[in-house]
Length: 216
Image: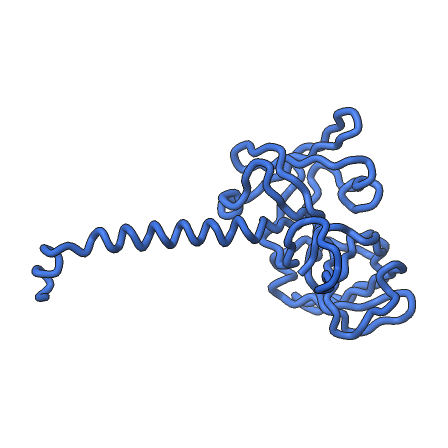
């Protein structure tokens, strides 16, 4: 589990790709002390497992499913990435619940400045838009952000100068891809309501006449 509060920007040191799998080595500083084999690190919002590390970098594997469903495939050497360690049980919770299981990829359709705010208009597929609500939470490249607007299949978020400096989102431009993870609580609520309604509809069809027609 993560919080969506980015700890540092890492730099891609090396990428080894074989078919639809990747091995990525990333240089970092802040997250390195105490790092362990098997530890989970969110890289641009994607939960990956540390397979090996040195004092200055760590390596993770990307399997085919992650290769297809995230924007990690677009990484190149020396690209900066958002990094966050998994939240410890005793740690402070600052953002919102982020699993690191990316739901889909969005495209930045528009980037505009308004005084000290930078607004991003990002495409979102219909199967994800049902989980996005005004003033709700969304993780974009692993960053916990608030939804400020919804227009058809587009969501709007804004960041402050600090977020622009300390995360990769400040470097993104129109046409760039971002990883999207919708709010976990919104997904559970949607499925609870959806399944509950489906159950009501099914129950309403089972009448006395229906049972008689079917030999009961």
